Length: 230
Image (cartoon, helix red, strand yellow):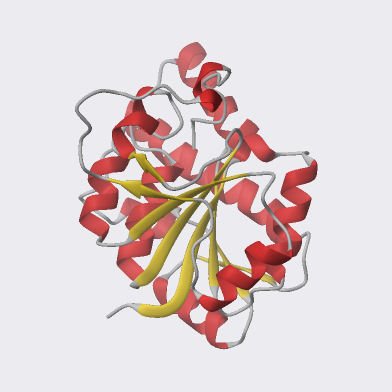
């Protein structure tokens, strides 16, 4: 059963320290009971990547550590607004939503128990956000990303090809049964808050149908592979 008007919002770790991040935190804090925040890993996940290269531990260990990196970033984010509460289970998420607050997902406990989530860098917080949206029956998934503007419809395969989302994302989004959308980080504010509270759409719908050819978009030409990790 879908949770009416509940949107899972993925906030990338690449937004760390930016003005858009602060704007989005204000926007999400105004949407208590309607949004669930999935944090990226940002600099914490980058540290795991560097450590794996230097120490040589396997992907299963790196996967666990990267989930904990998301939790570190999430706890930092949750501390910045009184309405935010860390949640490590579907039950906790639903309870915090009922209280009219904003759950910030701590993914390790749920993700490590899910056999369908492989221990691979191909699965980052984008795919995990899609998985969570399906797991809790959210009505929509919103990815907040640098770049844009995003409008109309975009192909999931395009987003993968240009490094905006991870390679597993189209599969996880398809399996979730949730409508995915993507919005530029700069598009926070009153209109975004109103849309999230009402269950409306902001940004661009993500289309899972494979295109005949990848289309060139203005925002793609200048985009680097930044913040693609958890």
